[in-house]
Length: 339
Picture 1 (cartoon, rainbow, N blue to C red):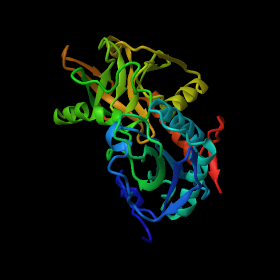
Picture 2: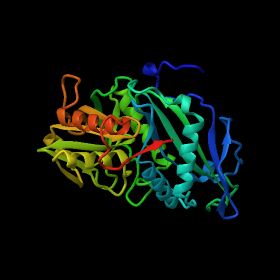
Picture 3: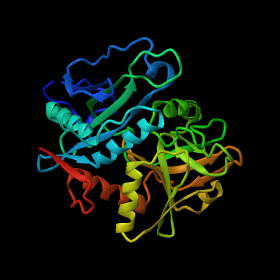
Picture 4: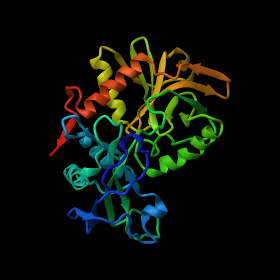
């Protein structure tokens, strides 16, 4: 591979030169190893395959206009992986080891970091799973950590444009006191039925409500929800949603821009009070919402009718992306330059 057409890159997997691996045996982590293989040799009785012991992260590396590669809040990803691992009884991968794996993978695959200004990034996927053989329902005694990278284009082909979303009551993504706050594969598998049903009806995404009462906004597909009203950034507080690093960053940026912020339960009826709405996460950064349809009440909540994001959402998006690429000063201390 000499050169990609970075501007037309899909959000998908493309093989790079190396991935990084590390193994947990006899109660301790070994040293990092590099591999050129895209495949893993896994025991047929591994707990990841039978009992769902698997957690993952997602972060990006950005090429700046100055030719420097930047990472965004990688330590928060490392800490969240530790949190997810604890939620399904897996050993913690130390933050320092996580960082070593990220930096080494970028250095080994630097030629795959897309050019500045193309809208493409180097997506970094670390994951941890139970690789030891167990037939009884119990934690594994052995674990494998793998980190691979792949260049990706925008998550949505349309880019930063509003999408239509459907409220879902037929399915739950996660229950209170369950695994919803952990970044584990089972939560995403549980969301697929609702997302597929929404797409079959012509919607880009599905909004989940709380599993207990079906009264409050929970996740927006695989992302966090937010709404804007009265110069206030409002995002749900729930015991069953993932704590998005992107959402945390948008809260900080909103406050730096003089906005108020609220993290609290958001009743469905409040959708009519928002002037703008969106979903946020690492993959798409922000996905503005044009309309939300509630099939139970036949209500349509409209936030954009001209296929453009609202002014506040646009300002938040531009500020965050500019920090990630190094186009604006990082006043928050989020950026690490990869040497």
